[in-house]
Amino acid sequence: MKITQYSRQQLTRLVAQYRDNSWIGSHYFKRNQFPTKYTRGDIVLLTNTDIAHETLSGLVTKKLFERGYQIYHDMDYERLATISVAHIYNLRKSKTYPNLIGKNLNNAILYPNVNQHLIGTT
Image (cartoon, rainbow, N blue to C red; front, side):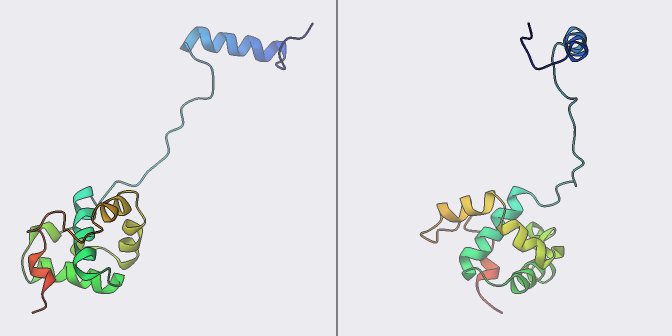
């Protein structure tokens, strides 16, 4: 009488695996991932900039970040000054970005002093 769909050899192997490892299944597979370059704080800065400027194009947003770092020497924009336009759009598609935008529908900036110099144009 057959109780499972496993063959005798498979059951022997699974029992041995459980005895050795205390679990049954495939080995844990760790995917290779690129290191995270942009932090949640960078996404907050992007969100603040988008709220203040009503979500400009990626190229203009990149230029604002470059300006914030190079002209105004704001160290908060050090990483974002070198961001690519494509990565700005990737950050906007991240899980964090819509949550931050959704919490700020009344256009309240998350950290009011973060990008004061980026709001006006000089």
